[in-house]
Image (cartoon, rainbow, N blue to C red; front, side, top):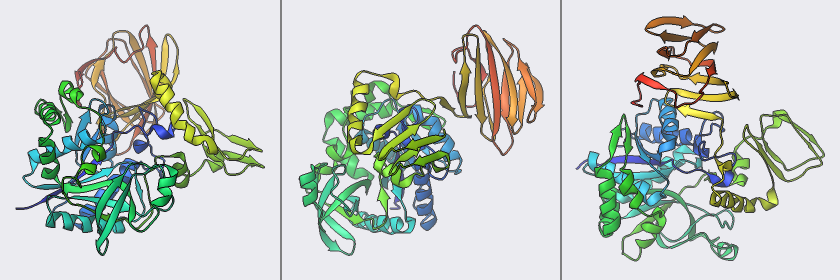
Length: 472
């Protein structure tokens, strides 16, 4: 029986520990801060590398993410011409459910499959070492189908942020996992710095049926999982589990629900060590290590050991050991020594349902994105970035007129079935109640300034007549 190996990318997190760099509606995995690439795209590049090494059995990935991030995924996948099935969770429910949904999709498509579950927010510096490590675990899973494989990391310091596993060596870079330990206190973390303890990287390899068979023993989880999947909807390549039955499932991590129970169930767990630079980008300390600071706009006077992320010119005078993160929504300043308290701030804001976690001026759509430059009671100015080979819906507005100015590239405009072509520095008026559409059929992005004027300036004032993305 042929085996399909299916990478599963978990891309639904909000990255709250590095707020305000990462926000709920613009999370860290999609931020292009790594040489104009996002962590999600770096993960895609890892999968493409695996496929080049063994393109016969490694499939395109399944992405599990939040409904709010569907256009991030779709557009960044398109940059790599990588076709993928995308499962959209209606709300965050942690990784046990995310991976279960991916397992259900694989069960539908393939009689026999092995999942490689990869977080979307990890830095792995050496792709070849990654390939060799995953290959080692894959061969062992094929040999022992009813088992679980993990990628482990040699601890380089006594971290209280990672889970640990105790191991016993079997052969070259293959270990049996004897026990799991949740994120420890510092005293225990210091005890775990030895040859037989590894960090749990969160990268798992296992036969799809191993997890589904385990779920069968949990009637409540299994029944609601089946119902939310059976009653799913399919829109383009977006799979939407049924919201009602999805809501019935409890939040729990894959580690707590499944992984840590396997040893007591006599299900073998194996690990291989990823012997290269790795980081999960879950803290400001790790962000500082991997993201270039804003040195071009920074003027230092007797200031040291500062990390600055800002598009604004920043002057530091006699300041040491601080983090400064500035965008269009926030100015965030923290003492590096007190940054551990940052999570408490986020928790407090979350408890109060504060909107401080959410603002972001960039709104993503399937055709591109826009930024609101200025807004008043009767006019609004947007900067629209339209991706190559994309177009907006054919629509009209009852309460506003629009004026479009092309500042980069070229577009075609349809107004009441009449076609116009606009190049850079050309403009056109869109009268109220006229049907219209913006089209970019070139191979480059187009950038347009849109000025709205009217009594209602809202996304609700959109009546669509034709849409490539099946929106109402």
